[in-house]
Image (cartoon, rainbow, N blue to C red; front, side):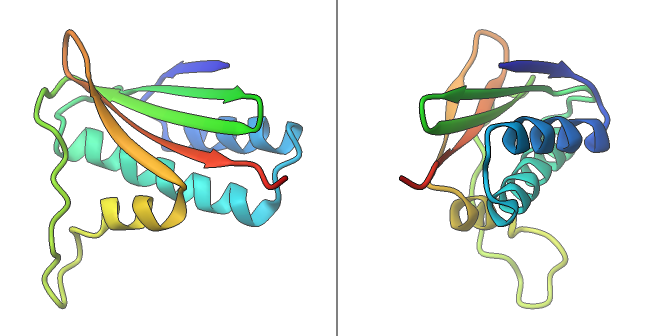
Length: 120
């Protein structure tokens, strides 16, 4: 388990990459997880108004869980992006890149998470 409280996207991505590499995850799955983490962090900054979201990377058995906590109590709402829009696809990406994702309300804000299952 690794707990980060940093506004640095590069540090968060590197920490995730290191943890997954040490656990033997394939590089293609690591790249998917990094992209999903990026989307959750950007959402926490942009929509959650949190300058330093808390990132939690947890591996239990053959499941990786990554969560990003921000201070906004409002749940993320997947949107249909405009055809030529430059934003609005983040949660669709997270859904497509991971096995599961969700939102857990916190005493102060929320935690948005995703999970990946290791291949048997």
